[in-house]
Length: 217
Image (cartoon, rainbow, N blue to C red; front, top):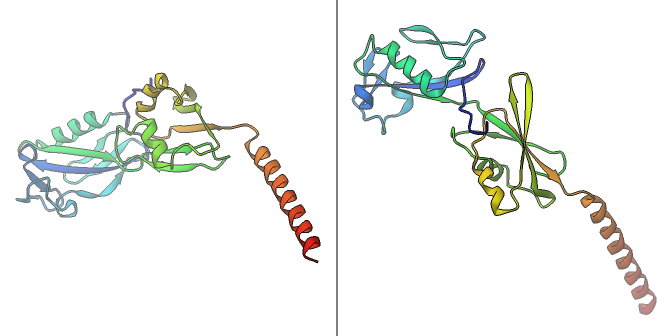
């Protein structure tokens, strides 16, 4: 289940780049012409759908020259194939690249309730990479008690991960999916122990200063 492929959902934002001749030339679908620049060096704003397109409530995106295309529920590869087939009626050997730009997860790194939103720039971002982008497991977090929480339909599934031992590190390289939650348990009593230690230290320093003042006078 951790290896599930991401599927485009309603309200996702997608960036679509369209090329002709199997990727050798970028196509300006707004102007209806193909630029001569090689796909790897082209300025995206010059010949692509540079503005993110929103998947509407019906699961469609509106594309220049071909109208509405249903993408909701499809994998990235499936969506690219459908858009390629649509543009194949107009252009020669179209090549399409689609990125979902609003994929994100929440990471609670064990610092005590505070979480961080992590944007997923890459489709195959792993658990350990997501934690690294959220500044890693905090000093108060328990690497042996990490939970990956994922919504499946109307239910939430919880996967327990142990990242403290070599045997459990394989799970750290599992890909995360949009809207996942990574939750690191906090070491119990950490704040209480720190408070006790600080109180003892302050008391000790106060006593030392008091004795110093007596001796000085």
